[in-house]
Length: 205
Image (cartoon, helix red, strand yellow):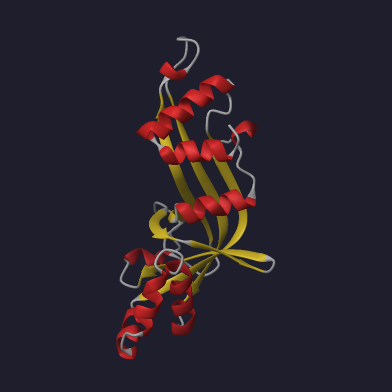
């Protein structure tokens, strides 16, 4: 990902915040069945887990997903998370000698893939994924018949990606004058992209 220094999002807490707010990842990996085949690209929600010295991103796929066969234990993968994005009109700039652009936040994670296929580990993985968004569902799940739970857990395969490197980008008009940035924030807050405005204010732009 091309990231000029003034657009870098290096703060680990902000990187995790981006994943928490926008958990749907694009997982990109070589097809382990055929090196000459196009890369696999799979969408799946992920949760960030810090486990002592190691950080993980966890999610799951349906066992029936044919692409699952192209993912090998221990292979390198790339996860891409995309945050808020918004069109930027040059009407908000001081000079008319400007062109439109696009503001956005993105995170690329390189890591090593591991499959999770025992029922207890998958159950814990699902709870970590669901509980932050729907804590009431945990009790509902526990109240379901055990054979039904086993059937559903058997229908998925958990994925854990050991994080090796993270590159974050927040292209939020940092290269523009303060007055221009303020006009953009007000424009976004007025309805175009409130989430973009919140990120700009959070980063002190």
